[in-house]
Figure 1 (cartoon, one colour):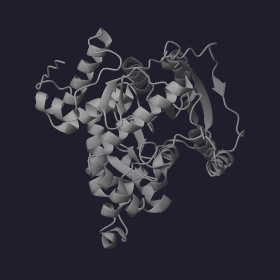
Figure 2 (spheres, rainbow, N blue to C red):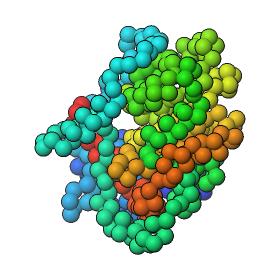
Figure 3 (cartoon, helix red, strand yellow):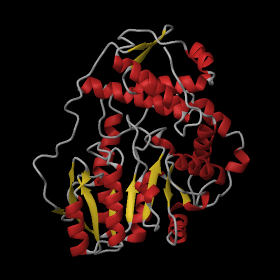
Length: 390
């Protein structure tokens, strides 16, 4: 098996290895059931770190093209799954929805879902909760050694070390962000609440996708906002209808989920993201980009809309609840430009700051170097679950 690496390329080595092995499988050079080289032997042959091979194999496993056998190594997958019907159709075409106040209570739905999780044998599809890392206990023990420092009040924007780590992670996703643009929040739900309450007042029009995350709808209804639901197409929010309502209703905010949209699972293209941002710029309407599931995608995704933002129109929200453990309640919000200080002061009034213990555990997790491996394992498990459902 010949693999050529371009060490001057901007593409990471593990992705080059992934692409080459995928190509060999698709061409038939590697057949179903063939055993791949061991991690050690391939690392020696390519003169790379063993972790690079582990990352490549984990991504291939997440793609469903290879599988690991306990004590035997990695093999080309012998199973194939029909995926011809995975493209969304959103047929028939949907109409714009002007939502009336009321309806299902977010509180009632959340409490019912939490109670359901406690039922023995319950298969819970109501929340996207991940399996926590196997070494979480060890990570927490290391993180909580400095209990004296953690027992004091901290800055409302969050611990500096954690903000540096999050900023570095976001830079790798294409965002131009620094620690001074970040606020650590109690999950993404608080981040959404902080942003929406800053941009929206009672009686304001707000544009959302239809369907969308019901927790965001609950926040907007609590604020007294008037909600315009723009229907989804296979590419994302219907941009023709978006422009029509930007022109006619002058909304104060566009709420969008660009990657692994909740609940459709759709990820918008680079062109759609750019066009949506162009419309927001044209009509001077801020965007709230909620990417809670960023990192769990099976295929490479475009950079977030925030990465394209040059006018500080986009506020970006992320969380560790979907990739690590929801009980820690650690999310973050990226606010560039003039809105940062007002949102930070609002955060202080909400809860002073996120638990220092939770922040320390997340920080130690990111510093341990296991985050990418854990994400690859989650993707592998998720794609297996998806294929079983298909």
